[in-house]
Length: 272
Image (cartoon, rainbow, N blue to C red; front, side, top):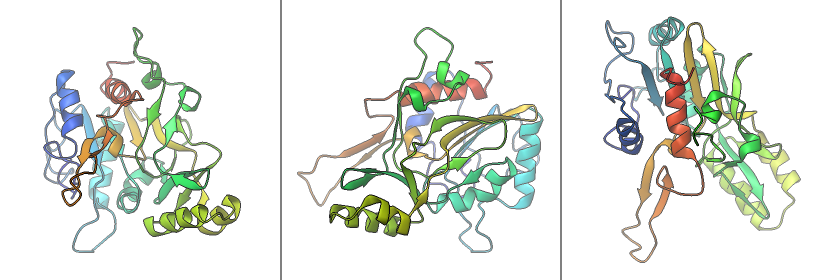
């Protein structure tokens, strides 16, 4: 979906995701119009929505109006598949109504963990934090996912019957916005007690950062972090000696590429 203000386009920030899927045999196309338009989802196996934005005219906060949301719900219920990736604030607010239609609650802030006298929003999910689901197990032959890493997102709660793919730890919190997250970091670095600071400025994270569930005859995966499906390189032209920062699919130490392939295989029913 490139019709709702997202910067995650198949020729831009989601080029890495598109390249990975095309290399696996998928056709990847951009939709630039309304999703309730006649024929908008004809021939589509998986609808991918990543960080849709609120309309610029300020008429509503939801990226999608009620007619589009109902059209997507009907399409999925009849057998379509939806991959909804929704980052940290403000993206959760823009996708909140769409998520709610599928029974998903969004934290809408910045999920983080405390690490010594600091915080990190780059979360690591080892095997014990990964759900019992075909997306994690794969089809055999080395397709099992052992570790997933995310790169700053929100937390989620799924509907009854959903599987938590990425389980948040007991010490995970959510700050309402970036300024608050930075204030938490500054106070922890100054030596303040983590329990005092998080009780004042944060709230416990919702249970998940990744969910999978059936919806009618269709399938849905919701991720609370969209950057893990990118392959971005951040350069610093005003600091030529600074090493470029990579995040997403072009980093090592995790199985995010395999996770991305497995979730698409499940959504497109290559995995039962």
